[in-house]
Structures are given as structure tokens and as C-alpha cells.
Image (cartoon, rainbow, N blue to C red; front, side, top):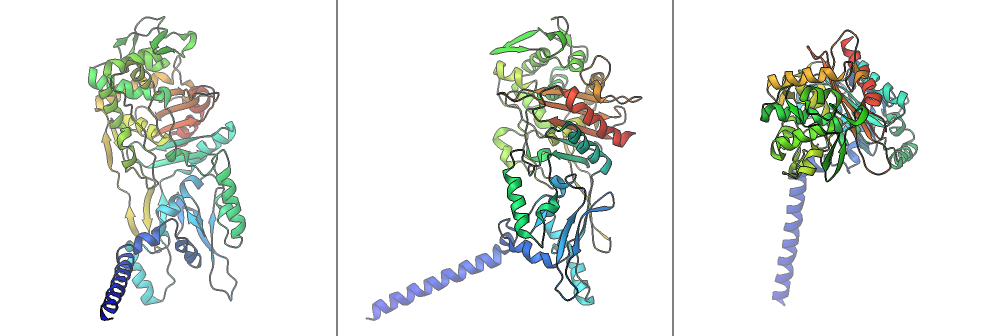
Length: 489
């Protein structure tokens, strides 16, 4: 009899020990992770009774908390958003069942629970002052953002645009279209309607919840030719006057034609690198890619920020919104694949942010700066909690190579170039158009990247129009020009 009792007692003790270990593990080591888990709705519902700090752009609050309680009620705060869909892909929304955008990434600062605010919180406890979240100030330039957003509205086409200050990496604009009004999904008084609106957005085939600027990849088309040209200059010693065979059609498994007027680049004769960039010659740039070789083309793309496909999931680029990895060409020495990769097709894929980084890197003497959206975080008394400090991301090319690329890119926006719709009167603008095949019956993606002024860059841009079916000059360049003009004029 004693033996079974002893066994039962030991078994019970082991169960209690396991329970205590599990409780200790969860509360002692995993409490913070569980609290911040996106599936934990309590972190949002409990915050409805507390004021969140504002999110500001150019000194104006574009997201703030408003007390909607009656005089005799416990305070209840409604998050209010300005600008309709203009800023939503960046700012995001704060809902009773979740958060997105800056509302999510900076949540602990906005709700005041971050350790960086511990001294302030302790002071508030002592003084009896109502606690408040921090003020998050973004780098976005309203004029740049509005110019890009309105450009998409005017065209009525889906896509994205990103603008960067080349010297610092500050993101001046990040447009994703279509968008949505965060007020429609954030109601405290009618959460059922907010939930229904969110579900409707999730099911919308145009994907308004998708931040195309950071979270979508596209074949970059001919905008990638500047990366191929950079590789030719860096690794082969090419100059603007170096020539390459430019037949009207290049056989790469299947024929690769030119999209230039008349289907020719230089009447079929070898063409200079500068002229090939100016008119966006397919066959000569494909031949340059083959001449450079797969390893060097891959290396050059990685220098600008593209990721090897095998390492793509380990991409750590955050702005602080997460950014989908852009895929560098990775085809070894297969001539057919390599030639098409050199003109931004094949297995090359890029986010709009990445192509803006390419443009900004060239504008900044070959140095790519780490892009960022949060300029500063300030306490409720406006004292600085954190202040952004520009940081280099990579050295993509030498300064001399960047200067050569700039000179060639300015030809693109001049008479005879492929991107004249991006020209700004009285100013040199560097640019590159792109038209990317997408397969199937859908139209091509249309791109433009560039920066201005070419001799003193203040803004670098990348614009992509989804399935625009036209050219980069026709569809993307006008939006890019408007965004650049918002800064330089």
C-alpha cells in the first residue's frame, strides 16, 4: 500500500514542479513577449482608457487621442487621424483588436510604457500628473507626400512612390495607393462597424492594406540598368564613351528586342554606355551584364542594398516599418538569364524603397544612407527622448563612378532621352525610366527613378505604376517630377 502512495505523491510533486517551472518561465522570461504579441488584444483594449501621444508630421498632429467620455464617465480616448488615406500606410491605425504602421512599431513610446520614459513616469506618479505617451515626429515632408498621392489619384492607377533625402536617408515621402482612412477602422463607440470595415479592406482585391512602398516587390525593369552600368564602370573600367554591341534583337533563349523608337539603339551598331542609358537600350545593357558576369553584377546589386535570395528572410532593414527584401540577381553565368537580369527582368525584384535607395546612393557620391521615418521622439513636455542620427548603410560605388552615372542619368531627362517628362525647367534632373514585363495579360509596370538638382541633390525618388501598360516616361515620370518639385522649387 505504501509503495503506490509514494509513487502517487512523487508524481503529484513532479506535476506541481512542472507547473511552477512553466509559470516561472512564462512570467519571468516571456511576459514581455506575450504582452507585445500581435495576437494579444489586451494590449490594445486596455489602452483605450489612456491617452496616446501624437504622431506629427512637420509639427502638425496627424494622429492623436481625443477624450470622448462624458463628464461622469471614466476617460475613454478615440484615436483621430488627419489626411484621409494620405498618411495611413505610414502612420497606420490603432484599433481595439490590433495596430499597424508607426502606431504599432512605436507603440510603447506612444502609450508611455517604454523604459525610455521611466523617469518621466516616476515623476508623474510623485506629482499625481496624468500620464501621457510620447510625441513621435516623422521625417515626411507634407508637400512631397501630397504631390505623390495626388499624382496617383489623378492617374487612377495602383502603385507606390518613395522619396529620400540622399544626404541623410530621411524618408520625405512614402506613398502607397490605394490607401484607406484609418478613422473607418478605429472607432471606439462602434467597434463592430470598424471590424466590418477592416474585413472589407482585407477582402478588397486592390489590397489597400498593403504598404506597397515597403512591403511589395516588383521587377524593376530598366531602372536596374543603372546598377548594371555601375558594375561595368566599377569592375570593367567602362566609361561613358565605352561601346558595346547593340543589335536590334539579342538572342537570349528567346529574342530580346529593343523598346527604343524604331527598335534600334544606334542603327544596330555598337552603342556608347552613355547613349544606351539615355535611350534605355536593352540589347547593349544586356550585353554589358553578360560581360560583367553574374558574380560581379550580384555584388553590385548587394552593394546598393539588394539581398541574396538565400539570405532574403534575414533582412534586417527597418525604417522602423519592416521592409520586404529586394532580390539581387543570382544566376551564375547563364548567359540567357544574366542578360535579362541586367535590364531588371529575370529573377531581379525590388521594393520601391530599394530603388529609391539606388537613386539616393548615386546622388550621395555612391554612399547609401540608412533610410528612416522617425526624426525624433519627444516627451510630453517636448524634451527630446531620441533624435535620429544619419547612418551609412553601404558604399555602393566610388564617388567617381557615382559622378559618371549622374552625368549619364541627366541625359535621360533631356531632349532625346527616355524620361523627358521628369524634366524641371532651369534645372538638371538625373533620372532613369523603366518598363517591366509582368507576364500574362496584365500590362507592364512603369518606373521612374531620379534625383534633383543633379549637381546638388536634395531629393531622390522612385515611382512605380502597377500594370500601367504604358512607359515609365508616360506614367511614372510626371509623379516623380511633382515630388521633386515640392522640394526644389
